[in-house]
Amino acid sequence: MINETPRVRFAPSPTGYLHVGGLRTALYNFLFARRNNGRFILRIEDTDRKRFVEGAVENLVASLKWCGLEFDEGPDAAGDVGPYMQSRRLDIYDYHAKQLIESGHAYYCFCTPERLNALREEQQKQKLPQAKYDKHCLHLSKDEIEKSLASGIDKVIRLNVEPNQKIIFEDIIRGRVEFDSNNIDDQVLIKSDGYPTYHLANVVDDHLMKITHVIRGEEWLSSTPKHILLYDFFNWEKPEFAHLPLLLNPDRSKLSKRQGDVAVEDYRAKGYLKEALVNFVALLGWNAGDDKEFYYMNELIEKFSLERVNKSGAVFDLEKLNWLNAEHLRKKTDNEILQLLKEEINHSALDISQYPDEYLLKVITAMKERVSFIHEFLSKSPYLFEAPKEYEQAAIAKGWKPETPEELKKLCSAFSNLENPSKEDFEQAFEKAVGELNISKGKLIHPLRLAVSGMSTGPGMFDILFILGKEEVIKRINNAVETIRA
Figure 1 (tube, helix red, strand yellow):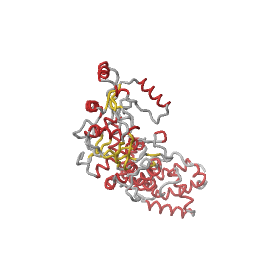
Figure 2 (tube, rainbow, N blue to C red):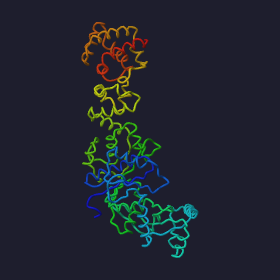
Figure 3 (cartoon, one colour):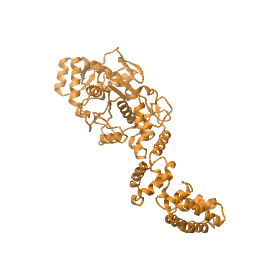
Figure 4 (tube, one colour):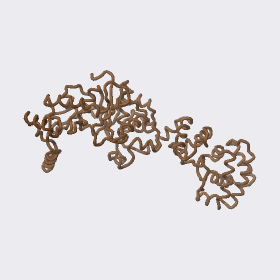
């Protein structure tokens, strides 16, 4: 047994923002660890220096923590098997690569880029199924190798894959998987710059960090036989493997930046709640065996198992994400929404000091069922934060008559007699004015809404009046009477 306590890792490359596919991999590792009382480890695989992006590590960590995926071991957490940055472990990889050379399972390769390109072109001309290294340097004499090493010629270290072998392993999600070693290239393990490739570093680190379960995306399935060989060559116990299905666009193509937002940072910036995004991502390839779709994190931990992960690709349905966001928002208490709304106002051009908590809680009560995002409290009811500067022209044409200004003045008079009016007080005063004017309610309610909000739709009219208060309502009606012309 590798370790009595389950240990899993999320091992991203710091090449940019955290992709939602990476978030799903991290989430499934996190859920598995928490469900099985295990350890969730963050390891940064930063050995591809050409693709390294400054600040990417900090962004990855921030995105994971924002989603609630706190790691037990990692670059800025406790742990006794670090460093957790691969660029700080180069001597470890070099040591193990040389072990493989000594055992004959790896070899130095001094081939120039020109020779490798010519070899590839020749194999393409022959229409071979795939380009592979021809093991030329495997057959160099000891003297030739020592001479090349002494002269400082650029070199790499390659895996020595023996032909005609069957490489078989059990995948928790896919079952029995079999590969033919004749289709596996002599993978580079150490590059000419001294940095390891993913394959060597991944296996060495997983072993030294006592990883019991490797949970990663389907795109790594074809690399797994190389890793199986390395485990065998080192005579190490292999972890269990679970390869997650691809994430797909609605047209069944692979989810990519070209077809929309794919970074966690994008969805955070657009106002999606972390609870909704985690809930949505958890369902991209997994279900608990029932029809339930709404989950909090603790429920996901309780229900999650790798055996319930599907093999087939999971479609990224933005409409479902939007629905979940609305559901999670409505499940929050008014006080929770209040804090989020205050943050939203602080990031807007509005002056937060103008809106006491009591006022904002009234806004929340009126609008909670009408919004799917926090920012929609502002965008869908701007009149609750600022007096309208413009009025819907279609509503003016439909409901604003020559007699409307006088009717609204009569209504203002009725409102002015109220003392600290409630919603019901406004409604009673309205009905009294309508009766005295001898007109239908509809003839006055629509111009009233237009005058107060500038819009023809919104929450209940008397809710709006109560939120704004008598003085502001009268001020807005008078301004509309002076501004709007039928």
